[in-house]
Image (cartoon, rainbow over all chains, first blue to last red; front, side):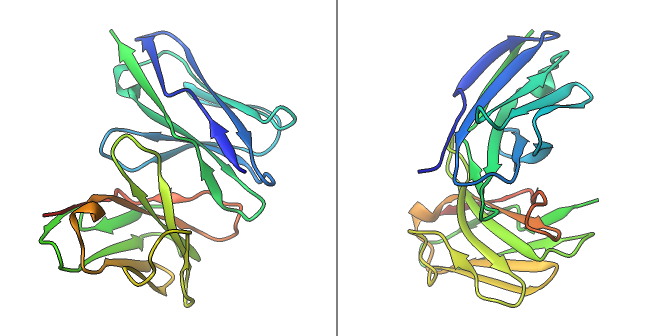
Length: 109
Length: 116
């Protein structure tokens, strides 16, 4: 079966750095997406990785290792507004998005 | 760019009534639109995938006669929840994909449905 694993919840301090991991087992791979979802709102797109390596976009970076079935989202200089759920999703061979359950990130002052 | 709107944002209805939710891509043509449902503190659950001009493909366990999807144009898809019941109360989110299958999906703001 297809499976996406990510931690249920993480806590970090304002101004610090946090890494949210995601491991996956899917039938085929056409890219990995990270989305941010604030409570009561729809997800918003953060990043897309299809090749191995690190993609940096401002305070957020995303890393992919296809051989390990592993990705992480790195958030730097954390701000209170970064408190949200972060969803990892993999596009399988049928171009369907397989969703993780999301990681709730709590930022403390 | 890549803005998706959804209407209404919130709806309360009586049990047994039908509710229609619209999803529009405002600045691009969406070959494919997706409808998701999300219960509190749970992940997104794909309900169906629709391509413009053809019948929607429903995920296993989703009743196609209860959740009617129409994708009449490249910028509009509608989801109608027929004979709604309290267990249909949920957050319904649509997303739209601009073109080729490998592109990302852009999400609408969601519709919160409460069936009394």
